[in-house]
Image 1: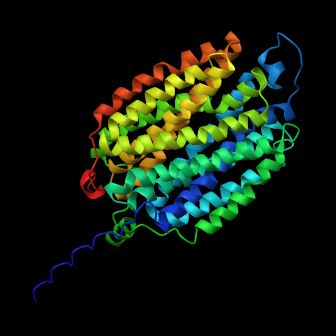
Image 2: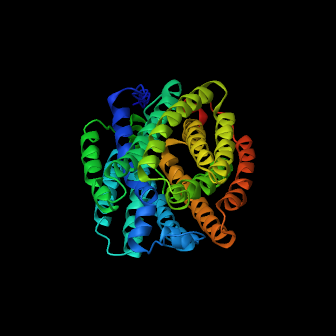
Length: 425
């Protein structure tokens, strides 16, 4: 008897960027942002709680903040370095599924963040927060992967921008709540609010679905044989992606991590003023996302990502140049530039690799970002201590990173292509 022809694979069900499954992913991104951003936004409170702040003139950084820049940089570097574990965690989504790993990692990570509010000392805080970081980072990477897989090329950059906006809202909410509680309240009650973010994940879980593209992959059993592996013929694409991820993290690591310490302990701004800046950054971030989405769909993924990367580097130098107006302008412009970068880079990364390893590649990208952030934090903290100047430290760390934009032109342009065309399995 003749063999019957195989039934053609039905096209995957795709969603618009405003549909509930995509909105659910954005909610998880917001919850993860709240949990991940805590160590940065509350750095001045953490340093004051576990160190000794001195009042007066002509003080060193350690006397102004409570802990030295080297100690703070080392603690933040450990937290960042722990995110390397997100590589195997994110890779699990290529085997166990997007929905299960996303919700599980986000929930466990937020529980640990809440527990860190009970830390008896600085290094206990660092260790607990470091335990939560890879879980929340992996959750965000899997959310990005799932967002790309559930949308068409026409909606993908919008959906990625929405996810970035959700993460930004969650991260900004931490700083806003902290500012509303006032300068006299320690970091502990704000970190305990991670339990509220956990409830948001539980709500979002009802709307999140497994992407059809992954379901079809399961049916053909094309999942990677070993965790963390990427097909050899895609390594030429992976290299430039990792270079760019490393470079922008070299800047955003210290730029985002030290900005609240710098504004409150060096420039003597109150937490409420810092919160106002964060709220204003929400507007510039939204404008940046809109510009980045437009650029990704009209100019192309590569040039838009390059503009965002160079803009982040330039704004970072301005942020630490030494005055309150420069801090405000630099911080707002850095958020805008990073928001321009996010939709283009997020869409490009998803479109360059097949479904079978897309979450694994997201994990590798996170790992490159972790190494970049750790390198930036250690170098920035060391330079700030030795030179006793933030402006020179920023120039030393941020200016060379802008050259990585050249690596984007080693990648193919994927604007307008569906995933099955831009990266066939």
